[in-house]
Image (cartoon, rainbow, N blue to C red; front, top):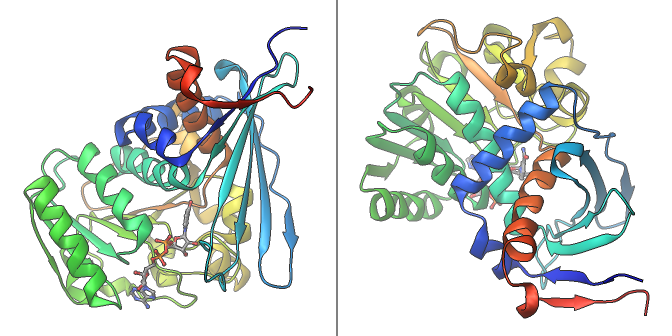
Length: 330
Ligand SMILES: NC(=O)c1ccc[n+]([C@@H]2O[C@H](COP(=O)([O-])OP(=O)(O)OC[C@H]3O[C@@H](n4cnc5c(N)ncnc54)[C@H](O)[C@@H]3O)[C@@H](O)[C@H]2O)c1
């Protein structure tokens, strides 16, 4: 029998080989494959527990020569453990053998940021200079890195968070890392100044008012990723060019889910999915005045693309002798 090693890859090993530009490249090409109908991605099942849930996210892209399943929990009450933990198992589609199991927490933040980065590349005005962030928690940190990677002319960054210390801390990081002018501001100023606005809060009723959003703004709506969650005034969704990552997921739990269930928008108000935009099946931004919204829920294909990159760098191209491995069939 051939080598039956399953590599066990830790968060720090993932971090060492997955930069934001790697994640942007991996996610853009998987969005292209998805737009071409070359990704298998059945809807994710949920297990409900008393104190949380567990989601299972499978994907297969023949072009990558790998399949993956991410298992990710949400346990909001966890005190001694993170509330969200994730592992990704990568499979060889030829044999079904599990070639690697890796930590998925850092990778999830990177692939989420990369999705918004790709959407911003296609949908934001290319001369965007001012970034706004509503929510300055964990996701906002990698979102900042993605925005800085795709927008060459950023001069100013505004942060709003209900916890002003978080907003100030991220503003300091933006100044130190990228040499831009950055500060904590109030919600309205953050929204109305932004050429590109990224929202990453867990709120369940809208906090971004339609009349604060300037014409020409691009919005990455990240926080709404479960039924009942929404961050944007539905009037924004009604007026904007609305791009989802995947209709089934977005209508179930994305930013659009509440407006859809209340009948404020319908399926016809969704302009495209991101795969259609990346392959050019539908034009991206067409004028400097239109407001564009990317509704991100997070696709299993994004996890697969980033995990395949990590596996390639560490195992295929690198020297895997330093990695932990098990032979489950021993
Ligand atoms: N779309 C995706 O693919 C995806 C992926 C990961 C996480 N998420 C979602 O993104 C959201 C943020 O996740 P996170 O890991 O950054 O969480 P986090 O707890 O680290 O950060 C959330 C931030 O929002 C702030 N906040 C809460 N209520 C607010 C309000 N009313 N106004 C302004 N700020 C407020 C908090 O103070 C905190 O700093 C969650 O809803 C999460 O489920 C989406």
